[in-house]
Length: 255
Ligand SMILES: C[S@@+](CC[C@H](N)C(=O)[O-])C[C@H]1O[C@@H](n2cnc3c(N)ncnc32)[C@H](O)[C@@H]1O
Image (cartoon, rainbow, N blue to C red):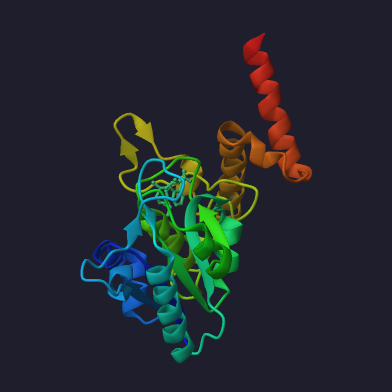
């Protein structure tokens, strides 16, 4: 059984088009995951195919109707059941949700199926969220015009964690946020670009030295760019020494 994702959106083509590219597109072609989109307009029963209405109590903008979204969610659940997924998780992409993290993406990749609800306008009737949504996820503290880009971000972050999606599983292990370190810097040809040479250790062929250098660089980058990540876990032996020497260098510069 491959990983199942259903997306409920007023712009299904946007999701389907974007899902064709790169690593995740190839993984879909290889049946490592399956995508199905549902347009809530297909679940309306009036001649205008209405999916939104004015908010009770007044105020700006429109609110997405609960009924077509409910029917779309039930249709997605029925499809996932046919694929062998008993309890897909229904996620509403919302700026009010918990911030998406690497950890959450990994956890979601171990569930068999997701139903992603992307809204437009001012959002969705609260009663739909209260009854049919399991979790709300935000991709950042800003408001976008719709949930399609957030759904694509979540899909990409989750799908690349599915075993077999990345050709070399070490790619997943080395990435930023997998540990408390950011990724190490990468270099490729040419050996000299403008006046900048590739660090000699990478040309040495000495694997232990290369590994050690890469780890040191990851520690340095993390300390420079995301010191908050260092504070999450106590530093061990060598890492502690690297960070202490960075702090000493900085203090020297400041004096
Ligand atoms: C214009 S927004 C509505 C924002 C809502 N009125 C609020 O302030 O919380 C329309 C839809 O875009 C999606 N969206 C916007 N920003 C998002 C974010 N940062 N993360 C996840 N989804 C987002 C959600 O599906 C949202 O319902």
